[in-house]
Amino acid sequence: MEYNSCFDIIGPIMVGPSSSHTAGAVTIGNFVYQILNGVPDRVEITFFGSFSQTYRGHGTDKAIIGGLLGMGTDDLRIKQALELAEEHGMKMMFRLEEECPYFDHPNTVLIRAEKGKESVVVGGVSLGGGLSKVFLIDEIQVDIPLNAPRSVVLHKGNLTRKIHFR
Amino acid sequence: MDFKSMAELLDHCERKKRSIAEVMLDVEASKTGRSKATIIEMMKQRLMKMKDAVDAGVSDRSTAPSGISGGDACLMGHYKDKGEYLSGSFIVDAMRFSFATSETNARMGVIVATPTAGAAGILPGCLFSLRENAGLSYEKLVMGLFTASALGYVIANRAFISGAAGGCQAEVGSATAMAAGAIVELKGGTPVQAVNATAIALKSMLGLVCDPVAGLVEVPCIKRNVIGTAIAFSAADIALAGITSRIPCDEVIAAMYEIGKKMPVTLRETSLGGLAMTPTGKEIKDRILKKESF
Image 1 (tube, rainbow over the protein chains, first blue to last red):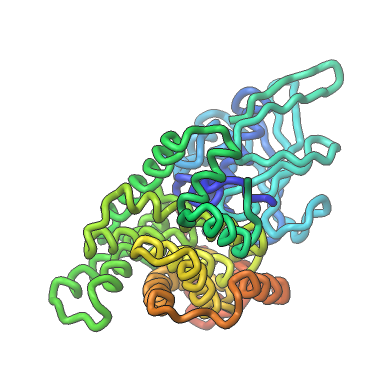
Image 2: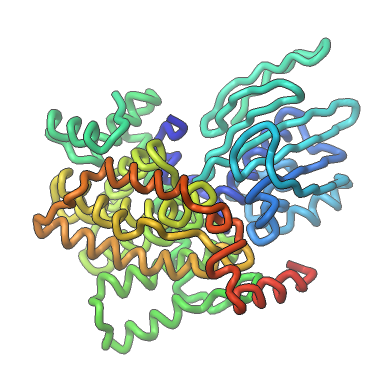
């Protein structure tokens, strides 16, 4: 059961136009923001499947970048996220691919993000209705639903970080 | 306590002598440990966001950034004011509020996904029409949202609710089915009647493909939302008349899943088929892609 709550069905409160391509994407971007504990300096975003076919019309690029800037799904600034990221000095690169090699779903994205000396690769999938999950962190397959606050402990080299994901 | 099928949901209702909305509230409370008052407050917050989207949309004549939608909620309003509509005030208002919400969504305004943003117009359209025409209180409408979420919860976990996964039948179809059941319960129908309305609405949406022009949630999505409200009210009336679905709701959902799985990828939100690939659909896409600022 992927959907666990009445609020997975009625919600999220979000800016349009698409729960899969906008809200779900904001949440994945925001997860990366929280892992890096701030706005990354440089990001490389690869869209797969339906994400790569229709990202422009749904503002999926703005949504992911909005999340990477720390915005939530109902933040009206998502519309201007690309401009705000440039003002912030974030270097952005987008790539479009057909099928995701890591996870079989039409709405998947891979985000490679750097902040200072830290970097992380996160694979996320938007399952529909604004519900997303993370299936990859660096080289490791994970399964982290992003529909409820939870704690994630990351061990990386000598680094251990506990994140209370909102 | 939980439920994985309409049969299980109805079983809970029957044994506890509770409505679908009350069962959903019980399940949410038992799973999260939150008080019912808190859960009701959270749902009310969503209802009020829906109201804001309707209020913003009914009088906004502006177009979406794409230039291909906007202003139809206003036209529907003028038409209603003339008083010569055919389908009755419940459906005319539901269509008007549905236009308003879906147009707000296309403008990148704030909406509530029900269950998705692409299908966000249907449930608010139906609920606020019930308020306008039958004087239902906000408290009642909140309970309608619990009914709808219970029905959507079963559909989402047994099949899918996004156009990319299962076509428009999964998206507008699910929302219409949820709204139909919610209307029945708000009109005092039984849980069994609500689930029948859900089955009847979903059956009439089976096979509907997801073929958005230029990949935007506008054409044909907005009008499919609007027509969805009319189907929801019709299915509710059918069920309230005591008419049942010959195919049980869980089997209808299973059929929706099977059909969605077989649907070609060109007809699942990739904009590579259907209306998206008509001469006009392609022309719109070319025109929009040329706009640098968009």
